[in-house]
Length: 434
Ligand SMILES: Cc1ncc(COP(=O)(O)O)c(C=O)c1O
Image 1 (cartoon, protein in one colour):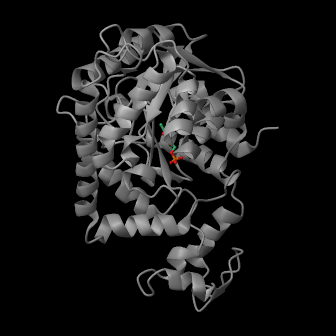
Image 2: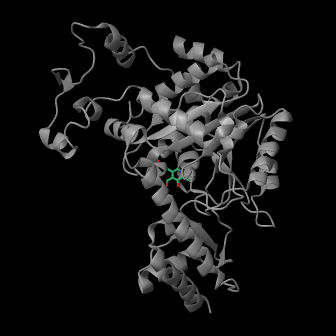
Image 3: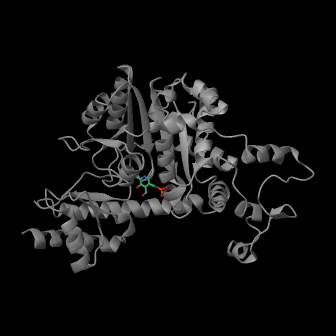
């Protein structure tokens, strides 16, 4: 039985592109006017006693273990910034600041209507929340054939749907826009879903400015054919762009108001952008040309419901620390610039080293220009065999992907060791395959 609030939200969303994508869970879910909503109301009005939330307080602050508080530099963060629950949907100020930063990094978004980014428990949680809300058993989602393996766990194993692949690179070693377009047109019924991740894991590839426009145009063309298209941009490694011609904005910016039939979702996170891997703070942002504030509110209510019934709410200390660093961190920009420069330096060294082996018939690096990774095509030979050999013989750890790709996370290798790393990978390939 559908709750009355869910029915109201469904009616609103059915007058927009998002309605076409709601899963059965997505149709059932809503944000109840329960404890969280009542506590928020009491937070504003219950000036005498606020006996709503299960959170032990004294003198206006959460009670806490002084050992834990002591690990934070005393006085810089209030106990409430560390120990309290974060508000449903995340710290309001962090959400606003994240949106401001998003627009700064993606100037094309200026003036476009998007939702206020909602906090999730990391980008994985963003993707699984999207899957819960907009992907049903038996549904398919288009995805290039070089992808982050967790997509399979989420969309195939958890949701019992399928990934519909197209080849990542075309014959000119550019992003395969035509393959993507065909896969979208080939989706069953009048909807198509796609997940795209740039800078890509595992390839380290981001489309050039012209390629990104071709991607946008192809998606718009599919939308114009009458198909409703949901596009989830996974921006996990956003910002790590090392070449001039690479597009520096998220695909989301170009789709946010591209067409009424396009439902654009941005998944991003502090995880890598702010280098806080263990904090578990991600975001989810919605846009579509046809959206009004009412549609966005309804989507946010659905998302709040999905979060409330899974993790309830997300990491408080992480949100407070990230907000403080972005707002007033003394070394914030300097540290970020330093890290970027270091990653770029590793990238350039790696590119140069790989040139030495360009005649190898055993391993072919896929084109890469961004992010944390590069990957080799093992040319029909077993990437797992190479991975195990590298580990056993040379104590080098790399990742095998689907037994045909070997991924190197050069982000975790010092500049002075990159040359040796590359030499070992090629030596290992020679030793086992020639
Ligand atoms: C492409 C991609 N998307 C999403 C994630 C998940 O990020 P988080 O750690 O914020 O869940 C990762 C992390 O490895 C990733 O590589």
